[in-house]
Image 1 (cartoon, rainbow, N blue to C red):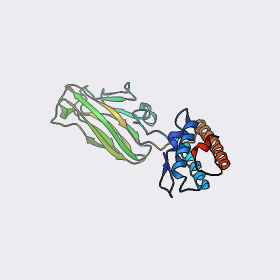
Image 2 (cartoon, rainbow, N blue to C red; image 1 turned 90 degrees about the vertical axis):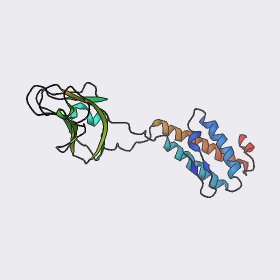
Image 3 (cartoon, rainbow, N blue to C red; image 1 turned 180 degrees about the horizontal axis):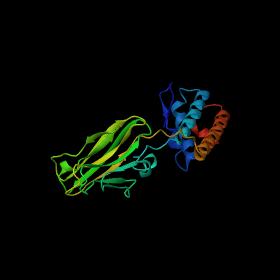
Image 4 (cartoon, rainbow, N blue to C red; image 1 turned 135 degrees about the vertical axis):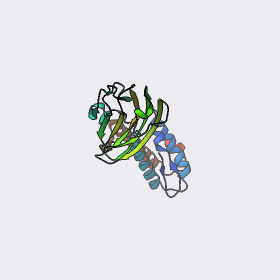
Length: 247
């Protein structure tokens, strides 16, 4: 992060000065360099204002949040929050959660049956996932796909191999019921199973973070050093040489 002076177009990389254990020395050296660069174009008052604003901006940057990772089958999408609807002797294996879950089709001779795993979207956004399908029967007799408000979208290819895989994504609105279906058209001649992984679903944004103790302590140290710098500049009576700061 840098604070840019609009008059001179020069940016002060104050964030790097606060990053390490030798922050105090770095700030001092930074100020010396800045004074050499800006001394000819800025008054002491403007320079001090520039440094104070830069230190404040850098300190707030320390509290930035990291990028959000895949939701997987955890949190809002933990297996216990989903609805399992199982026809025939199908099953759903959640032992791989949060990384993956597996849907297994019926094979008890009971005719067409669905194995569904569904949930209501907590907020609007995009659902994405990878899938890996395998069947002992023909692919046409054990299709796999996703559900959105009861509508089934098939992902497997009826004319494809007994082992297939792919990735998919679709949009949902808050409250939409979506999920996965492993179907069997006849429940005979072998089961099919599909493993869903790299799942990501929309989640409500987290509350705005409040700077914790470390950023606040950093701010105190930075502004304390800034006050010492001001005293030295005032005592020097000019900005002619950075050597005068070493008093």
